Amino acid sequence: MTTVPGFARRIDAARLPALLSAMPKAELHLHIEGSLEPEMIFALAQRNGVSLPYHSVEALRRAYAFTDLQSFLDIYYAGASVLRTEQDFYDLAWAYLEKAAAEHVVRAEIFFDPQTHTERGVPMGTVVKGLARACHDARVRRGTSAALILCFLRHLSEQDAFDTLQAAMPYRHLFIGVGLDSSEVGHPPAKFARVFARARALGLHVVAHAGEEGPPAYIWQALDVLKAERIDHGVQAVHDPALMQRLVAGRIPLTVCPLSNQKLCVFPDLRRHNLKTLLDAGVVATVNSDDPAYFGGYVNANYRQVFAATGMDAGHAWQLASNSLEASFAPVSEKKRWMGQLVECFESFVG
Ligand code: HPA
Ligand code: ZN
View 1 (cartoon, rainbow, N blue to C red):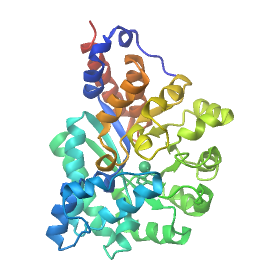
View 2: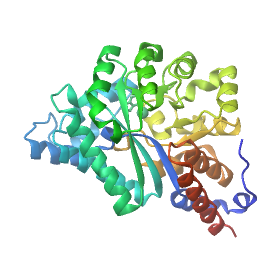
View 3: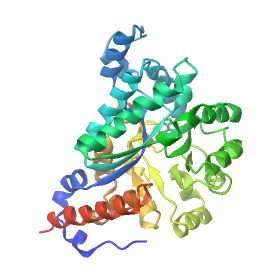
View 4: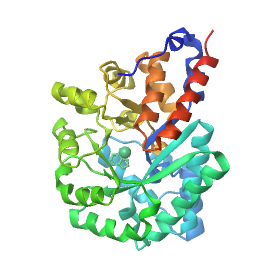
């Protein structure tokens, strides 16, 4: 475990919420379709002549009462159906990246689900080019480093994933990795062994959702079969001591999403969340927002609420921010620069 610098111990607890907001951080688990706010769903529906089964933004928001992952995914895929043009994808990503910059996110690694769109007849290029243009503009206009990770939907077949990777090949230079999301239980990582091997052979980074609702065995598979470099969620790892050892010894990051876990009833209450347990055990855990438009907050709200609920301190804040920078796929030179900014930020809160 990297050590927590002494100055982090000398920060007044009253300043913790401000520190959490101000500290430079990476967001590594954000589904761009999950940043689609109800207001934008209505605006895009009107722009594209799509009719919605809800009369108002408020009525749509009222439907956001989830009992588990699947109950969320049904509404999430329905919401994404208003996205049609390259400009729609640009506007979506730009809206997220502006919020991220305001929350001191210096690096965003953004998931997108092309199959949600290509199966509705939206071309792959429309999706990727719109998102990538927003990432480029975020760098130029806001100084935010942003990159894309293409996710396969695990409830679909491995052949469908292969076809998706093939369709994305003309845009290989516009994304840095592949991931695995959607309905977890019943769709183990091993189902995608060959397509992940292909992705690795192409030089892509690989990550996978595992251990959100699924068992520790799925996390083992993501590591051993898919060779995942990071695990998305992974909170079920605490039930397997050998797996915890593996995560700690291998410094394998977990991209944890507290408000998502609360909204999808992974934990009965945010006070019962195991983020502090993971960190104190030496796991390279990070804080992320997953689907902020649906789960009640962007990344800083995730930090603030999980800290308030579980009693973490400035040492944990240091650990989480430095973990997020370390766990990112950004160049080492950029990571060093952000670590310098992190030190400066913490020093400005001492005393
Ligand atoms: N889990 C699985 N699939 C998803 C999620 C998630 O939290 N968010 C969007 N797709
Ligand atoms: Zn997710």
